[in-house]
Image (tube, rainbow, N blue to C red; front, top):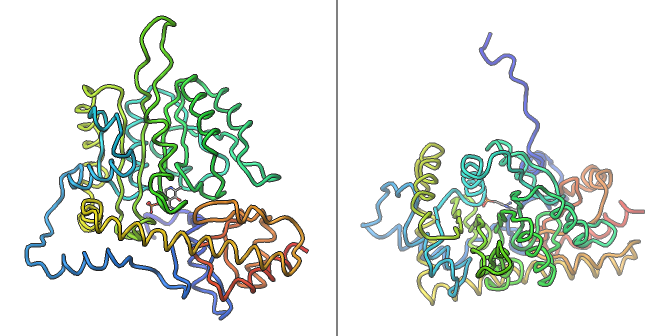
Length: 415
Ligand code: PMP
């Protein structure tokens, strides 16, 4: 007998488990629309040209070492990653109110921030997650001891942000709750608030003194512009809390956190390149906050990986490499847009019942088709088309040669 004889088997992860099922399917027709990774139109993983060149340089340079990074990560990377997300004119950066640690891509950065908030934010604070959200949020926060609840985010009927429900739920949440927001390209719905809706969200966050936590996993991927995709974060970064007394001077800056992933926009998925940023109201607290974040990281993984952050820092530092990167991000985001258009046209041409405009209006890597779980399983069983059972397809996993097949299968599933 084993000490572990009673260990029950855990359920497969709904997203990563899908890849396993896909690999096991012998059908030549199979299509994987579950992956959250970019594929070329030939259905190949894509290494950015600029990344490839820097890696060749690093490999041929005899001075490239494999020393540990400091707990907080590569210094240049931290500075440049913060500038990318908050912008050149960020008041918080200028006033040195931002604590940044390089961490393990988006997921590790989320866990780090969650651990920090669990330990140092007010006791019993609840984290509000959008319904629906990226499933891993529901693993990360409870494991850091933070209770999660949902706020309404999406209206199935209109395929759009349920702004009234969202504002109502955030207004009804206990004051000083943690509110998780997707900075852009909301996963899984592909529906983002408009600029004026972001302003309304900011108003209720200020009013209730909530702590916003921006999960930023797709900067540049949504619109092709790093600036546009960081718009919501920068709007919040500039905000102050309402003044406590009507006559007093302006309130203190809003405190918030941002977790940043370079998995998608640099195609560095497996290298785990990301950062956790805590925006503080005053510079004097950054030193103790950094020291505590470092202690948490030390116990979790000691120090972050060096390779990917070294590549990323070079791209972010050199204006020519940066421009090249931006072009490649635009190539990726425009292929996704083209797939949206092709799928929409194919569904219309084959007369699939229902409205499919949301495929065009949704943004980012995913489209939330509006299929039931039964319809998704039908597509899997009959057509070998793999997607999560919430009806989310990865537009980045779709290729021109599969569009007609997918459209016809969807038509069959919904009629
Ligand atoms: N947040 C969201 C919303 C995501 O979609 C992802 C990637 N699937 C992540 C965070 C983190 O991914 P990673 O840890 O690979 O950076």
